[in-house]
Image (cartoon, rainbow, N blue to C red; front, side, top):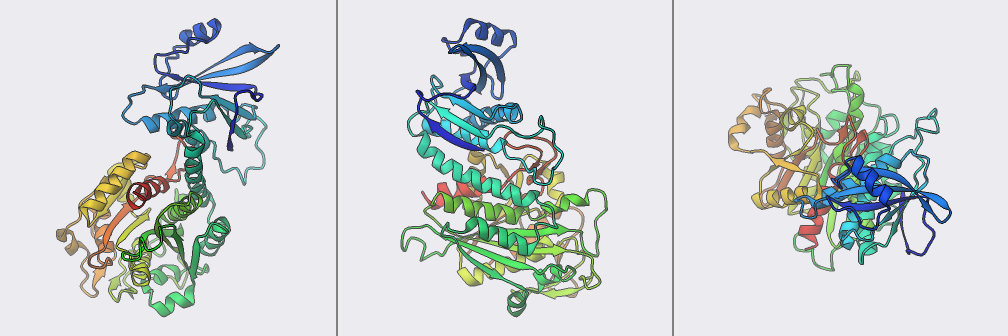
Length: 490
């Protein structure tokens, strides 16, 4: 789906949408449309859509009224996105190929108009690559949205938001693909293809390089699979010359378990197919790097993805094995299904040794316990720095990728102490998300501000949401992009 801007004197598509504030129907509406909207109880509430047909130039046009909600709503941007998304949801498979959104009389700013278009574009993303028997009524027909009478500044704002949308769509694509299509090597190749020509520098480590570096924790997870593990690093140097030289880049690190059977500690069969999205953290990092590059962000950022497949092969790591991480710390592997932290710990050590960042944010679909805690409404956040936590929380609220902070503390450390190694990879059943974060914290160097985002409940949705259909949501890209805008580019 593409969004284009068109002057008001150009021919309009057959389908035209007018934006309506709550309890404020436009005075120039045809009387029949006005009475029909009132009869249908259309009041301009967020997400409401009313449809009518009106005579126009000896023909008929399809007219939709879309509710914007109240102008003073506390989450105005989210409301505007929902308004645009509601239009796409209604007309995506309607048979119409083009939709014109008329911004005249809406009272929106350029940035607010871009929010409407942003929601409309995001809601139009679908993954139909492998569906060969869709009827014509099921296939998306809407391919273009035309912005008419857009307010001043809308085109410039859209340049930025369209780059973000592209990053989110790329993340959704990676997360939605099955594990026989996206595995460590193909993840790398797809990222290379999408980032080609953007200016992002790419470095890839394979089995040989990681073995030489002593990444025993990550490699222990991968040893049961025929798929070779990869470490993908993507560097965007968009900061002004010398601006980041003293502090190094900001690092985003993603867990990329492209399929997680649980290994020898195998998961139940029911629902295991969902574990193709266990690389949602890495997907979010890759999508963020694409978005930053596309909008030419003035920031120095390194994105790192630890990519493995966790399988129960005859060569797979066993419960009770002890592995040595790149940091030199040893881990007793109690449960091979607690593999994400083993991947992340070596990725975290590597990025610190290689790039010396002062700030790190990692993202991972790390624990089922996080879904028990927060459901599918928030991502969990852990941090060793209150200022970083506050900035990420603000970025989450502003972007819609909302976060909820959890505690860290020395009292939890004893739960992952091992009698034969430096630590265990799991603690007891209670506090599972916290002990996972405590595990990762042991790999953060002194003086580095670090946050861990456990997004297990957010990367996939079993039903449509505000700006996504059922399936991959693209969670994580928006909060990282907003953090870069508000903190690194401020």
